[in-house]
Length: 279
Length: 116
Image (tube, rainbow over all chains, first blue to last red; front, side, top):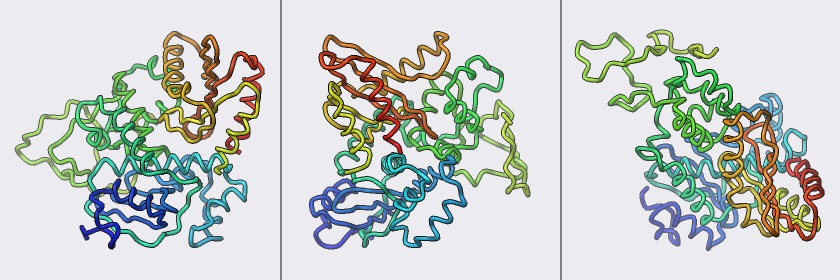
C-alpha cells in the first residue's frame, strides 16, 4: 500500500504534501496512517480537524484522565451517539464541558497528535471516506500544522540526541536522595510529572497517565532535566519495553551494572501495579 | 466561527483593546487570535520566565498576570487557571485610549466567558 491514495493524490510523497493536496481539493476524508505509532488524520473541507494516534492522548483521554468528565457521564453521552458524529455537541449540550474548553482540548489533542506522528516516518497511508470523530474546532490548515510541529521540534532540539529519542527515554526521579526544597517550589504540574517518572515510564506513558499532552510533558521533563531533578534511566541495548529479561540474569552481562536499585517486576506478578516510591 | 474566536472578538469591542490571543501556558500553542497580536507572540515565554524567577527569588502564590508597558502600549498577559494546563489570555492595550485598571477588569470578565 505504498502507493497511497487514488489518482489525483498519487503525487504525494509524504503526509504534508498529501494534506496540501487535500486542502487544495477541499476534500473531506480520513487518512489512515500505518506505521509506529500510526494513526488517523481527519480532514473536513480540506482542513484538518482531528488526529488520533496511539502516540499521544486523544480528546477522550484528555477529558477522562484529567477528570474533566467522569467515566459515567462519558458512557452515557456515547450511548446516545454510536457514530461519534455528535459527541462534541452532546458534551456541551449536557453542560459536561464548556464549548470553549472543548475547543481548547480538541485543538491541543490535534496538534499533540501531529507532533507525535512527526516523530516517526510512516510506513504508508490510505485515504478513506470521512470517519466520524469527536472534534470541536474550525479546522487547521496543513501549513499551520506543519509550522507548529516544526516549532515544537525546534523547542526541544537542544537535548542531546533527537527529540524522538527523548520521547522514548524512560525517566526516573533524581530526587530520591532528597532535595525537598527544590521540589517544594515546583509548580504542581512538574510535581505530578516527577511523581510519575519512575524509571519505567516514557514521556508518552506519563502523558497518558496524567491526561496531558505528550509535548507538554516533554517540555516539563526537559525543564526537570535541566534542573537535574530527573535523569534518563540508563538505556539498555534493547529499547523495546516489554522484552526485558524477567528471569534470573544470565551468567555474563555485557551491560554496565545498574548503580541504583529500582523496583523490579517479579515473574508472575505482572498485572498489579507497583507502588510508586512517592506514595 | 469558533466559540473561542467569537469570545475574543467581543473583547476587541472594548475601547483600547486592539488585539487578544488565547495561548497554552505550557506548549505556547495559540488557540485563537483576534486583532493585533504580534506584540504578544512571546507572552508564553515571558510569563514562564516571570513565574520561575519570582519563585526562585522567594515570591509566594500563583502567577496571575504579567504586564509589560511600552511608551504606547500595555501588553497584558493573564493566566487562566483551569483543570489541566493553564491558559494565557494576552492582550494589546492602547495606553492613549484606556487605563490599565479598566482594561484588566474587562479582560478578566472576558476570560470568564472564554471557556464557558
